Length: 294
Image (cartoon, rainbow, N blue to C red):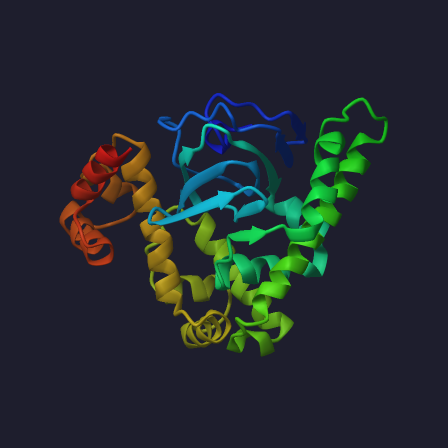
């Protein structure tokens, strides 16, 4: 597993299947002040709090707390910073690669994507199914001696994800958008746009840059994004750029000039102005604020 994909510094997963499924049975030994964090994982994370509380920061500027009986869902490539765990915490985490998530969920991947990218539904209550499901979780993921272990895990994973999707559907009933009436092709194009954006090292590009790679016009991409998500493609681009800014300011010692070069800004002055317009402070003020708080 790549170093920057570790959920918790110094904590190894109990189960690894072809680097596509990773199960962490306990997060008790979390090291909050880790030089490896915050991080953008190439995995979708499902963090289950069985007891106590866990507080994390997502995206560089949003804080979420999960309590006993709740799940925190973190989409792949989302900046994540563990901030606090209570002394009595009992929590585990499941990491699933993007490829496997799409394969296991099939057409239901749209439910996950809509919850993560359109409604930003990251915390859900497990309710009535939690005890029954999670009483089996450890048995399944720690049953490595089983001859059909991989098949057991994949079958359990599909049930687990479908139950989560069922809960996400229930939550989305009161959060309908214009995107509910979009065609499969339009949703597919929107998801392709997000994939391009996540994997582009220098995300601060014009809308026509992404439109050309999708073989559509900038106008159509703008209409598509607004109809599906209520946000313009430039807003999606800016939010993704800022996550990269937050990560580099959080977790590296790169200078502002070095960060501006890495992210494709023409100079550090332009970068500083851009960052201040979005964050309400300079890059150095943000870095100092983070160090003082954590």
